[in-house]
Image 1 (cartoon, rainbow, N blue to C red):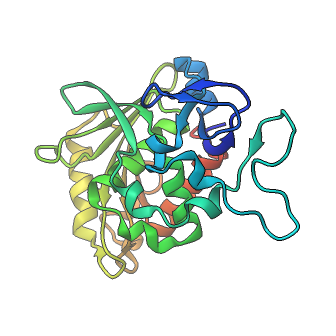
Image 2 (cartoon, one colour):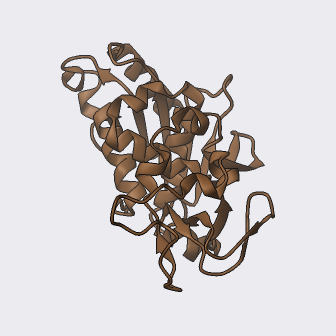
Length: 267
């Protein structure tokens, strides 16, 4: 399904983060991988204790019941229960921002492969869905991880985060292998709302496309906006939309939300 939810444990689980025990009826986070990750890499559901995910004990999530309503753990049903996730973690962005949003794996000549999306990725996206300004609160490296995690969760077979220096204008490389193989490069511009991406910034990526003939498409992704009428520039327009794509902050936000919900399809 590709999302994280706060649950009450039906059985005893072992935390995939710290290896501790999650007792029955205790709050925990359940991370269900995207169907493509299940199919291609055999990924399974992860159970993560509340301390690993948020730093808070399970009791933090047992909020006092409303008047006349049962408490979260007061029912006697043995069925696993989805808890009120949004209300309980709404005040935790600073803590989540300190945590990596992707799990890195093997190093390659181009950078480091993304092995999996970390648990906080979905919650960061949920904050962005509720408040678009959250996108501008992320440091540049977290924005790159956020975008890289979206590619991985969308089902791209290889997602690489390039090193900060010497990246050759490529921040993220996403690859689909097999028939109709695709290799795209994404250049991330983590800017404040008033900082616009210029035509020269986009032309720089076109230079990368010209020098790397094994790239199917180039994308410039920004948390802000592009300069007015940039898509009408005579040196840029001929490459759009099949060789070049411009993704501004609003498009980025919609894409992240779609991927988090499992609605996005890269095909």
